[in-house]
Length: 206
Image (cartoon, rainbow, N blue to C red; front, top):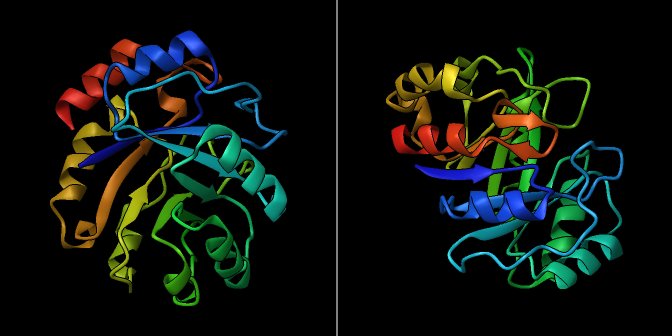
C-alpha cells in the first residue's frame, strides 16, 4: 500500500520525513491553511513524488507552482469542475491530477463519473469545517458504493489509533481500488510539523 504524508512545511522536518521514503509528500498551497507552504521545497529523494495541494486556485497559479517546485502531481481540494480538470490536464502535460471529494453519509458517488476521464486518481477525505486536515475519519463502509475503477487515496483522520480498523478495511472488497493512504493531522506535533517516530511506526505496520 502506498503512503502519502501531506501538509509538509518545515525544511528540517521535510528531510526527516523524506528519509522514511513515503511514496508521496504533499505541500499545501492554500493561503488560509495553517499548513500553507511558501518556501522552496528542499531536495528530496527522487522516488518520492511531490504533490501540490490547491483549493479553487486559478490555472495560472497552479501552473506557476508546478513549474517552480517541479511537482509530480496536483491535488485539487476545492469545488473544481470536470471542465476545469480537463483544461488543467491539457496545460499540465505530464503532471497527474488527484481530485478530492469530501465525504459524509449522504455523499453521491455518481458525481465521480464526469471526472474520470480527466484525473489520474480520486481522494476521499472527511467532510468538515476545513478543506482538509480535520482529524477524523468518515464511514469507510460508504465505499461499498464506489462505482469506479479509478484508483483512490484514502484520507481523513488516519493515525496509529485507526491502524487496526484500517487493516480490516483494506481486506474488504470495497478497498479493491484503494491505492494509497494519506496521513496528515494525526501525526502532527503542531500544524505541519510531523512526528517522525509515529510516522515510522505507522509505515512499518501498514
